[in-house]
Length: 141
Image (cartoon, rainbow, N blue to C red; front, side):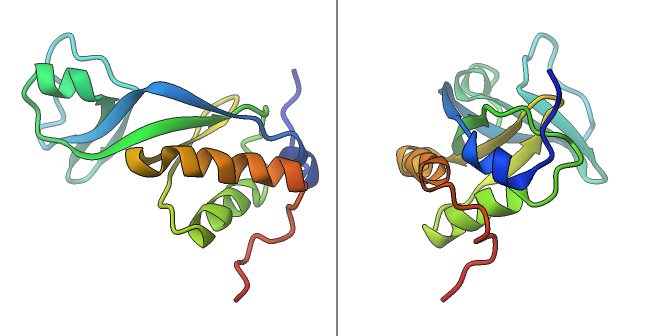
């Protein structure tokens, strides 16, 4: 499958899919994860290792966490070289007052949104496809 770079095509074929688990962010200043801990993803920062993991695992391991979120995968095979796709997504969510944290995977883009706004975020994302609007990356007043 070829990855898509065209912004109009990406927006017209965006197919959001929400994962069931609630995810949380944890920080490990010593860059070491507890043995056996499964993560959605990790990111190495100067201050320590950021890990996003299932809330149940954070509770089981008694880990401090922040930002309870739901993961929405944008089921269109977006190219890592696509320009503006996440800008459109984040602009539409911003207009609705919904924060998002984006992750670019090899095949798809993913966003984490607050648990209490997840259904609304999902509707906003479906609206991008249904309206086939991709030129409003900049929020207009």
